[in-house]
Length: 369
Image (cartoon, rainbow, N blue to C red; front, top):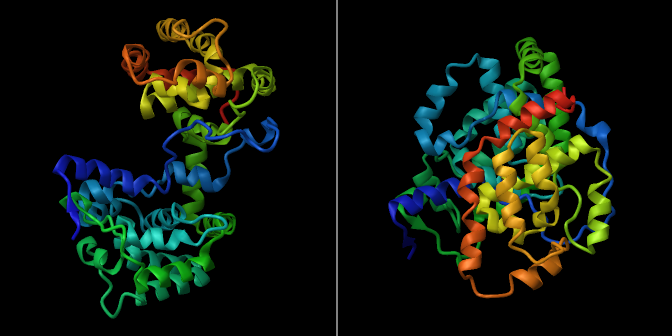
C-alpha cells in the first residue's frame, strides 16, 4: 500500500519531483575532475538560439502543479499559436538528454505528460515527423483513451509521484510495468539533445513568427537571464578537490571578472540550496577566500564581512583543500560551531547579490549576447 504525507510535505515534494530532471540540487562538485580544467572564454560570449528561446519563452512546466492542466492551458492561450507550439517543444526539450533513454519516460511520468496529445500536434505542425512518430507510439501504449489526468495516468507506472499532492507516495519495491518498459524502449530513439536543439533552431528559422520572436528576444533579453546563461556555462568550473596549490592554480586561470562571477555563483547556489554551512562543507568552500573580494567588487560590503567572519571560524591558514577542510573542521557531531556557521545563511540569502552581479557582469562586458 502507498504511504501518505502531510499536505504541506506533499506539495513541496511534488515541486522537487517535477524539477529534479532539470535542476541541479547543488552547484558543488562531488569529486575531483578526472580532466584538467580549461577556461574557454569563446564559449561564453554568445547565447545560442535555442537557449535564447528557452529563456524568453520557457515552457513553465511548474505551473502544471501550481495551476493544474486547465490553468496552464489558459495561461498558454495568451500566446500566438506558433509560440504555444514552441513552448510545447521546449517542454519536451527539458526531458531530452544525450546518451540516456530516460527522458521520454520522465516526460510521461511527470505532470508534463498531461500535455502529450498537444505535444504530438505541435511536433507534427513543426515538421518534427520522426519525433512525432515516437510520441504517437508512446501515447498509443496507454490504450485508446490517453489519460491526461495525472490521477489516472499514475496507475500505469510502477513508481509514480503524480499523486504526491494527495499525500500518496509510491511503493518503490514494485517492478516496472509494461508502460515503464515501453517508454524506455521508445526513449532510445529520442536520446539526442544536440540533434533536438538543432531541429528547434531550424524550426525557428523557417517559421516567421518564431523567427521574429527570436530576434526580439535576443535584442531584449534581460541582464539577469544573460547572467543565468553565463552561470550555466561556467559550471561546474574548476574542481575544489586536491591540493591547495592545485586548486588555486585552476581557479586563477580564470580572468578576474569571470572568477568574481564564478565564486559568487557558487556562493549563491550553495547558500540558497543548503546554507552557509553547506557552502563551506562542499567543494565550493575551497574558493571561500576569493568570495569577500568578489562581494566587494559587486558592491556587497556587508556580505563580504559576513563571509570573512565565517572564514575566521576555521583554523589558520584556511584549509583550502576540501578533503583537508572536512577532516579538520567537519568530522564531529553537529554542535554550536555548526549552528554559528549556518547562522550566516539568512543574511546572504536576503542580500540581492544576483542583481548586483548582473550589473557587475554587464559593466565588465562579460554578459553574453
